[in-house]
Length: 405
Image (cartoon, rainbow, N blue to C red; front, side, top):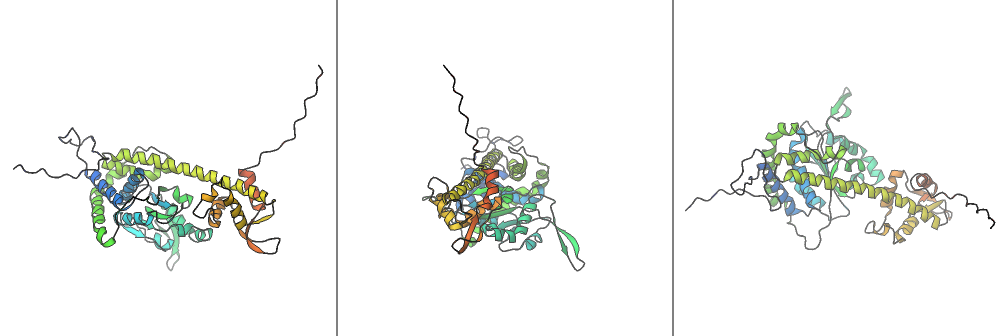
């Protein structure tokens, strides 16, 4: 009996091995057997597919490459954030973070941790920061102000050599603390713009009926995830010097290129189908986020115009109750506000949309003597004039002089 050929793990059907210069071809149709990098990334990709329904193939590629990139953090100039956001609960954000936690380099979970504790935990070989329910850190203006130091840490830590300075010790000496570390944040709704701009953004959705994933059980499933993690380490760590010298060709520029470069570099190290897949995901996902920014800007301008119409519908009073304003906005079936959330546009949503204009509700006294949360018309006049001025109405044209026959 002939001896059986040794089994070589293969990539999924959509990830066929391709010819890579410098690698010996297999006897089958001149194809090259997959590299260790291709196989390690394929294993990790399969684990995400097992437990989570991601919104697209591009998102699946991005998450896989981001996790792999954490194992070479000290080789990168920038530490991209992974922003896992969704419009509501039960979109799979926490489950995705569970799998990420067990496969990244040195996870540091920062639930309820102070900024001071976090930056004191970052060393020259940084951990991977993990923040679930990040919306509770930045959701309301009051809470966001309280956590401004954490936001500053996350912003500064995107780029190497941006330490934070603190006075410490009995002699009150100034000490430098490194901030550079990759971070994954999950939450409902978008995170602050400065964080989103530094992130690979994964926009999660609830599963449709019929979309099935495996249940995740920590004790049972963690060993398999750790095995994948160890395989990544064995492949990537010896490539540290090579990774430091890489300057991958990027399909985007500026901040987006800084954020995606580690992911594209990992794909180039793996070879096979990954380099093309990484650049395809980069282009598609950065374009989508740019469109989101444009949509959000248009939405904000729509809100200003609709609030002006709401004041006009009430006879342009000097002050209007927040509840009444929301009622008028949500009654307009032709506007986006009734579908803004499960409850339409809420007081919190209104506050967040108006934040960039420096407009907020406050306790007001109304003509009937009652006090309630509300807005004054004067608060909006500057924003209306700057962003959605009403068309100027000039004098009526004079009639043409009559001419005789």
